[in-house]
Amino acid sequence: MEDTLVIGGKKFNSRLFVGTGKYATPEMMIGAIKESGSELITVALRRMNIEGQQRTILDYLSELHCEILPNTAGCYTAEEAIRTARLARELGISDMVKLEVIGDQKTLFPDNEALLEAAKVLVKEGFVVLPYTSDDPIMAKKLEDIGCAAIMPLGAPIGSGLGIRNPYNIKIILETVKVPVIVDAGVGTASDAAYAMELGCSGVLMNTGIAGAKDPIKMARAMKYAVQAGRLAYLAGRIPKKLYANASSPLTDLIE
Image (cartoon, rainbow, N blue to C red; front, top):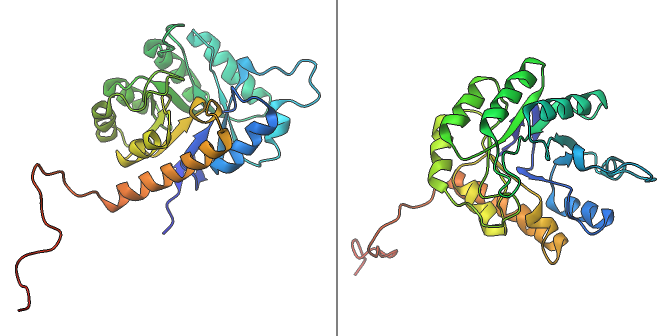
């Protein structure tokens, strides 16, 4: 059964999206991305060092034939984020953008007010906007209403590895919006990714959970299987939780 994810008119077979930061070497990054099976790769433009390098990160990623998703990570104002997104389009990278406007340097929580301001401008300019936001259902609905192609609520603070801290808000967001919901940030291990998918999320985006593992290659493979398993479990429909036991072998209608 075909189960593709469509964002901004583009189809993705993999529902696992990965970043490119914090790897020990470019070769390790490429190996992990290959193992993850991801088809959408985020690149933080403001943190991309191209000066004095024979091969940039974009040169390495060109070998993978994946969709590149420019990221406005490191932007603290709407103006900075808008400028970074425009630069990505001018460079011919993509008109799809992962929009981040950070509100606090310590927690890296998003500034939702500035995020909404930047999203309005970029949507009007024809960008396919994927906003990184808090797990606030009201903000999620506002972002959908102005034309964002997906909603990307945090599972936990960026790089924390704490997993899904507020699954109830994620569930409400899933009931509130119709566009894809992709959990972004906080995933630490495979069970976190599977849980996000079991909730009904359309995908999971992660970086540190893979790049920061002792063996990023193996963790990338584990995350791939976790996202697939969580998606299948969601589609299959879990059994309801019960307080007491319910025998799997019935005691009625037995043949004597």
